[in-house]
Image 1 (cartoon, rainbow, N blue to C red):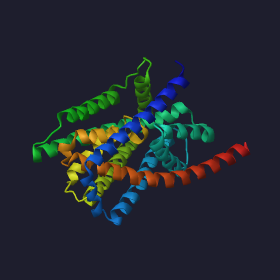
Image 2 (cartoon, rainbow, N blue to C red):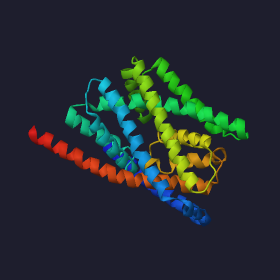
Image 3 (cartoon, rainbow, N blue to C red):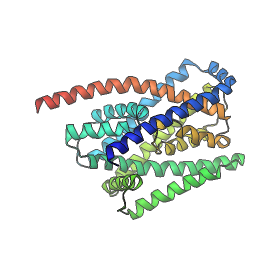
Length: 315
């Protein structure tokens, strides 16, 4: 099977899977209609705060990309990284990995930044993000267990496996000679790690920025669920955030639709909220973020296309 046909199957399969999941979520919430009464408690200020935090987290992600790409010898302006990240966020909500395709193509056209270097730049950030969030997940799973005696053993094992696997890759940096999506992705991550592993100051900066993103996401979750009149604790929101971040790496549906919600529902006892409320809150956050992504992503896309057009015209 050629790559084009294979990619089409993945693309349409992803869209179909997303639609099925969305229908199932709506069906479940419809059978639990009383949960929508929680929306009455939501304040405009809650929505505005969530809307404000999302662009800030995107801006921090853009800064991480900027620092890694600069370290690789390509002084691409932070403004371009920021605009690209807004477009990336929009496209990822519409097409699985659509944002990466656009960013890679744009950087190659504008700055002769090769696709292999682009995926390496993503990989360098991925491995740190995975390690940080797996450690956070383990730490807050332990804190929640000590306070409530509630634990999800399977997700603890997932956090533990992710932490050990990333530490193994960081320490030994193997190279996989086998073909396949998983091995290609691992090699891209390792290539990125090799670019930055000798830069402790950069690594510490990325860790700090990753922690700040996790904190901001936790604040978003706290605002959303408190706005739905729940008593979710901040410790639970940090656990929720780390779990969502790991789920995002299973990038087989647009915006991780259904994958993230599945992880959260599977861990509802640890989060300490009813399943219907978890789904309502997750969809609320997703909806607000999607609206902001459409607005900022489209504006950013227009700016980038104008710049790209001028560059192609001058050449």
